[in-house]
Length: 473
Image 1 (cartoon, helix red, strand yellow):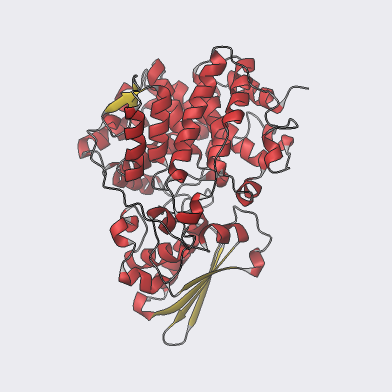
Image 2 (cartoon, rainbow, N blue to C red):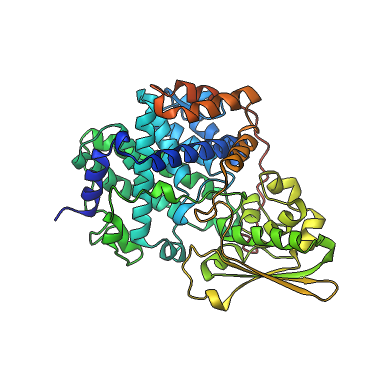
């Protein structure tokens, strides 16, 4: 019997853009637009700038664009820099517990630009990368990964990046299986950044993207990887003692994971998205002002609570931007005060705002009994708002805007893109980029796409290396 990696490699090797359903093509364009927007916004952050400066200091040269910087490098360096920028604000897509776009798209665009591939081949490769990442995640159970301290975005995403780049290279099934085996040996990512808000969450996406490029190129030169990297006695699925081979290979060519993507309206952990949407709706419906709120209780599933419900000391400001983005108390407070959560709500100058801290102290996350056995992707929020005049107003919010069941409209997605890209690009460049994305299936090269992506670059703000001794998240 062929290994799981070889089975998926055969599928990836034979995929063609012409065979993709129209819905998958349309979804891929939305994914590219969203990812490029958040990456351009993310390129302005200190941590993205540090990665770019480090890559530049190592003397990399090449023809792959580092988005928003005006610089170029090798496909490996471009994937590293752009993948880090894409995940820099935690605003990138997040389907099935993995931020797939931040790993797959930077790797695929870097490779496609470097080799002069047409837009249709890029989109085909991206679809394959989303498929492979999702199937690896399904087979290994991302909740078990989280509980063991692994970061699924990086652990699983490297496989999708290798598959996308390998497809652009037109590797044979055997070489693609080797690329997946090599990617598995690179697979890594740790959740310890939750303890003190360290920057490593951002770079793990970029590193996985870069490792995917490297894995495919090694395989292309005849370097071998273990083709039983998934189900073998020391394979990836041993990480969680969970083996669901049938979930990895089922419905190949019929199920397209890119149709299942979750987009983020709010620039923070997706585990609290329903809570933010539900709270906004609740205060609007009942015409509440922040001053009317005495307390808010938010019931989550166990995984969601472990990610966002056990943050830093509620009486202190989040120690870092990362900690604030993983704190339901902070994110919900600033959301109610501002009517939404974007990049500006996580500016370092905002973290210690007295009005935000005052409201965040009144917010209590907990594990709701009805969700005790819920899967990790259950983002249902049980909301109870206690008012100062003695009322308790409740709402159960089962999902959020951006979930496949309640998708953001095309207008909403474009508004988000313009907001993000406009942090770095001029109005003319934004329009050029939108036009190029819409025309990707017909572009013979990526010149019209990467031209406006280069931007002029902007100096990043200084980094304040603040740490928490209390386990801030």
